[in-house]
Structures are given as structure tokens and as C-alpha cells.
Length: 301
Image (cartoon, rainbow, N blue to C red; front, top):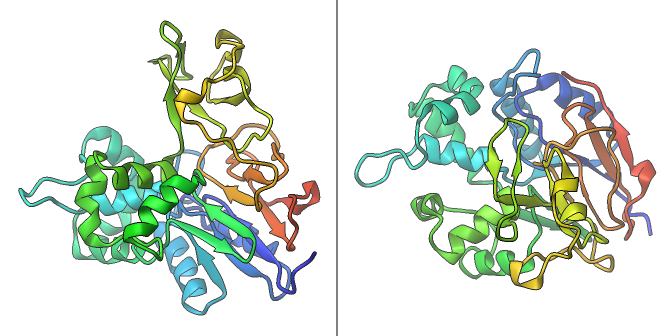
């Protein structure tokens, strides 16, 4: 049944103001805007990156109540990158790989500066998940167990500064739950099975498309595998702990995964909207099952 106010869901922006404005133009008059996180850190395909412009626009929309949003893994990474532990070491290593990923943000705000700390502090106002009257939003994975673990300590789903050192270490159930919601499930392949990723690195763990309701085998569920036929046709055993999203659950939308090809719905109640090569949004009108015509392509870099 349609709701009175539509919700326009916008996935990962990665410091692309052109994509942000193109996405906002798709919003029907009076629609609520909902962001899926990863506002910052431009990739190589962003023609004119501007972390400042994107954050200013998003923050203004949220401040006026016109928009809501969840935290992405890039926001969490930034919180950790610019903060130090009790011994003065960064909570996220400031190595070449992480500096490259975080380059556009650091070009605007520096590293560990008062400006960087102030901007990243705003990320703590973003919840790790949202349930909007029947529409669920999370950056990478909706997992009821992980949500319950976090909610037992942080009922509103928002992290505090005091949580960050624990989250960075990824050793506790709480920290692993945060990582699952923001980065998604990655599980070991069966013994002796592996693959080479797009960069040529050998992997014995694989990302899982938990939103594919009918996926059961390694080949059907795996993500980011250049040659899926190299994976087993066997079903993923229950001991791996993968919880595929049920077709009787409320709809949930995520970003994060950098999907290839034209945007598409891969399940009746759960979908990834992150298609960097062909950006899209989703217009939710209160439906219990996602509509193919709810997907709408937008411009941008």
C-alpha cells in the first residue's frame, strides 16, 4: 500500500557532487531523502571530487529534517584514521593503501587536524541502520543478530567515541557486528578452493550476496569473482553462518558493493543500489516487495 510520503534512497556518493545533485533531482516533490552512507573518498572515476560540497549539502538536508542517512564503512574508516589510541597510534593505519583510499577527504581537511576531527565527529550522528516504517536501510548487510548485539549497548544504533578503539581492533562481538553491517559478510571457501581477484591476488575467502533470496550455491552467491565457474556448484553449508534475506521480510536497501552492469533487482525484498558505472536511486512508495520500476538511473561522474 503506498505511503503518503515517498522515500528516495540514494546510495554511495563518494565525494561526487554532480551525482548527488542528479540524484536529488529524481526526488518527487515532498519526498523524504534517505542516504546509504559512503559520502566521502572519491574514486578515480569521479571527474570533479569535492568532499566539502557533498558533506555540506548532505548535512544541510539532514539538519532541516529533509533527509536521513546511515553510516558507511568509509565514514567509519575516517573516524578511525584521524583518531589515536592511548599510545598515540592511529586507530586505522595511515599506510599508503589507506591514504590513497582517503585522498580526496585529506586533500580538503588534512590528517588529524581540528577540521578533520570536527567533520568526522559528525559521522557519529549517523546510525548504523534505519527502519523507516517498513523500509530497512543499512550500508552493507542487514543482519538481525548483529543489530541485536549493537542495540544491546547502543539502542539508537549510533556509535560513541568510546567505542572506536574496540571497533578498530575487531576482536569483540560488538566490533564484529559493526563490521558486518558496514562491510558485509566475507566467508572462507571450502578447503583447497580459491580464486584470483581482478587485481590478480589469490583469495580463499569470498564476499557473499546475502540479498539474493534464491542463491544457495557458492557460484550463485559469490561477489567479485572474475570466473565464478571456478567455484564449487555445491550449496554453502550452514556452518558458514550466512543468513540469506528472506522473501517474507520487509524490504531492505544497501550500497557498498560496486556492482557491475545495469542496475537490477536481484531479490523481491532486498537489493544493492551501488552501481558506480550506471548510478541509480530507488523510489520507495510503501511496497512490501520491491518494484523494478522503482529503480531510476541518474547522471553524475
